[in-house]
Amino acid sequence: MKYQIGDEIIVLHNHESGKVVEIINDKMVLIEVRGVQFPAYNDQIDFPYFYRFNKQKIEQSTKGSPKKYIDQIPKEKPVPNKAKVADGVWLSLLPVFTFDEFNDEIVEKFKIYLNNRTEEAYQFEYSQHFMGNPSFELKNSIQSFHDFYLHDIDFAEVNDAPSFHLTFFLQNPQKSKAPHFETSVKIKSKQLFLKIEALKSNNQSVIEYLLFQTYPDKASDNEKFELSGLAAKNFKVYEAKKIRENLAPPRSEVDLHMEKLLDNWRDMSNYDILMYQLKEFEKWYYLAVAHRQPSLIIIHGVGSGKLRDEIHAILKTKNEVKTFVNQYHPRYGYGATEIYFQY
Image (cartoon, rainbow, N blue to C red; front, side):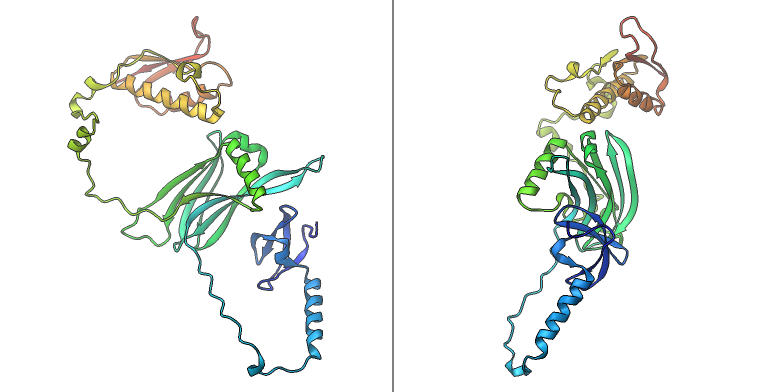
């Protein structure tokens, strides 16, 4: 490796001084210039003394050469200016490679960046989750055509269903634009592994996910659903006062074991399984409330207790819940919670 952490360097294209703060791989390093950190290829930087030495050699080689006057210098062909391409706001994962004991190149961690390649500046709220639980949160702003370093995640944590959630606000609000825009990226480990292999094959440096191309317009206050049009398309349209008559029948007992809910669930991640079970729970919970059921039994099993804890956390926020209990039952053991409602 040519560079080490702490080495003083010169950025060749603008002659700015900086230092190496991290080794990304054998071709790239993370450098800091005037307090700003960003990745750079090794051939984009040089050691200050090498740079000065090469510059002196060039100057000395030109000292003895005859003077050239303006009319003797051939005209250069004009080089068109490279305009900045506005192609949206992106979330980027920069893999940091290292070598294992067998000298095989492996990914050690990912550096997470927000890339704003639009004409607008934004305020943003960012949160990163593992298995649905928040791990990192940040509020900040990003200027037009700027990159913003967010944080790192270890490669091993990719198996914990990482997800990235962002809410954007225009730094200069416009009446015609939405007050905010929410979006998220959920990463599946198998797909990410394929992207890493493709990245190495194509000699690329980052994996990018598009968040949005243009900030959305504000929804019109005059936008209304045309119910007759929905009915013509075979949607069911009911009067609000008859809603209970058209609801699906409730259940007094709901089993949330995945083998009871889906046939092809074994390829799902733990996070996706949990989300599916909670969605199913909420469906039958709200049906029970709509039908004014006195009670409901939710069979969640014992396991690690994650599903039970998530359900209990939801129940604590519901005004319709008088009480709930998770105690030993001859049929379910400790794997069920009985909910009692109040209306």
